[in-house]
Amino acid sequence: MAPEPLTPEQTEQALAELPGWRAADGRLVREYAFGGHLPAAAMVVHVAAIQEELNHHSDLALGYATLGVSVNTHSVGGRVTELDVALARRIEEIAAGHGAS
Ligand SMILES: C[C@H](O)[C@H](O)[C@H]1CNC2=NC(N)=NC(=O)C2=N1
View 1 (cartoon, rainbow, N blue to C red):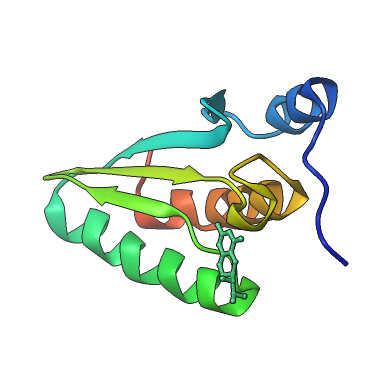
View 2 (tube, rainbow, N blue to C red):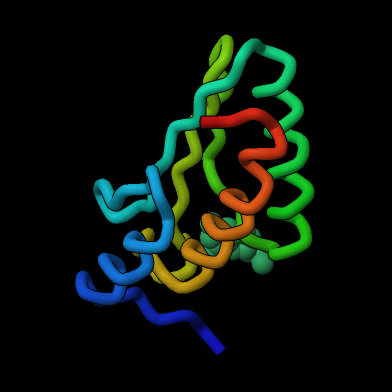
């Protein structure tokens, strides 16, 4: 079944349990900081594996010691759906293990 775009209220509810994430331009967005480049790059690979598992893919922006994550659902015209929230939750679960803050 096709996902439905979340209402603003549903998005706020989801964000209340996703520290550091925000909604911007119809996307869920988070920036992580690391102690150096390799831990940031390692997190990219881990996130990519999760994305393949979920068949849902964010835009990842790797910096020197930062990683930007930005996601929406293309199939509903670039809006936030439960699929984006599910991915954000999975990324949050692994972030601390990579030393991300
Ligand atoms: C064919 C494939 O299932 C689709 O292209 C998937 C892949 N990953 C995706 N990722 C995101 N962010 N939105 C989508 O609509 C989407 N669709």
